[in-house]
Image (cartoon, rainbow, N blue to C red; front, side, top):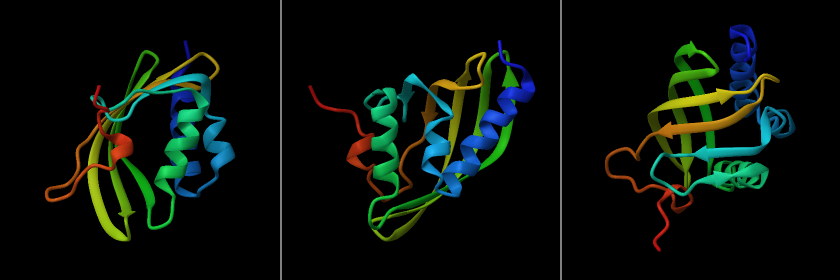
Amino acid sequence: MPTKEQIENTMKIHFNSWNNQKKDEWMNNWTEDIIMYDPVGGPNKEGKTALEETWKNSFKDGHHWKIEPIFMQICENQAALHVKNYGTVENEPIELDSIEIYWINEDGKIYQVQTYFGPPEGRTLDPFFSKKEL
């Protein structure tokens, strides 16, 4: 099981590398078989390919995101956070709060994440995050 210090470091790398757009550093913070429920209820995103798509979607033309951890609680191998998300979607500013739970392995890598968020009032959720119809 990872130590509290490992988990804190993993989360610091996650936020700093995302906000500074250091893609390789951000990608290296996850396991190869990562499973993302981002958000819960949307399509599952599995593996490093899903990470690549998440990155591309978040920083494509007219899109940009900064994420700020507001509060973090660590229990066992998990970090639960309240996160403030500041973004630009289709060149329009957007701000939302999320609750996020990360599972960290003994090597200090994220192997699962669940995020809970919805679009702000009057906005629609990007199709990348929407539940796929069967």
